Structures are given as structure tokens and as C-alpha cells.
Length: 154
Image (cartoon, rainbow, N blue to C red; front, side, top):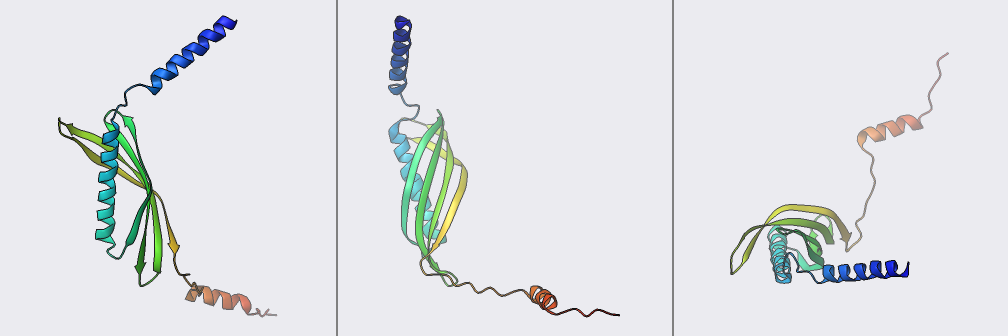
């Protein structure tokens, strides 16, 4: 029984060593290049569409190989913005994109962003937003009717 346990242990040890030391399907430099390019694209998009935004910060950004020619890039970023209605806010956005390899040559590899999913976003108001509840005209009429006593006919 001890020999069987030893054989199973050695098999697990050798198998895990080979898994840990196998070649990555996509080199680390490609992951870094994709991350840097996507950060640049997101930064340009935010600046173009929200020119008053500032303090863009990428809180999390990572890539993982889904297949040999497919990468998932996940991100969480935030920025400060201000407008007339809400005042200064901090916007946080979480999402991921799926990229597929289009072409590869000796100098570079080209990837296409085929899917973009925004999972969660949140808004933090820098200054408290005041909310004053006012009933709609229909709700006000219903409330008045409910408050009036009804007369019974004889």
C-alpha cells in the first residue's frame, strides 16, 4: 500500500511540474502589449466623450488566454467627472473584452477587439445630491382623495 501511495504522489508531483513549466500559449510580451493598447484606447475614448473628466485610474487590468488565438482582457477603471446636474462625481466601470488574433508576422501580432462587456459601473457623488420627493399630479390627487372622509348616503 505504501508503494502505491508513493507512485501516486510521484505521478502528481511530476504532472504538476510539467503543467507549471509548459510553454504559455501566448507570450507574456503579447499580454503586456494588449494591456497597454487597451489602456490607451480606453483613455482616448473617455477623454473624447467626456472632455471634463480627469484622474483616470486603472484599478485592475489583466489578460488571460482563453485559447491559442483568443484573449480575454478584464478591467476596472475610474475617473472624476463633473456636469451641471450632478456636480462632481467619481465614476467606476468594470468590464471585459474578448480579442481574437487576426494576423501574425515576424514583427508584430494584430488582435481584433470582437466583444466588449460592461459588467458594473458605479457613481460616487463628491458632493451630496439633494433629493426632494414631490408626488406626481396624479399621485397628489389620489392622496387627497384618500385623506378626505367619504360620506355615506342614506
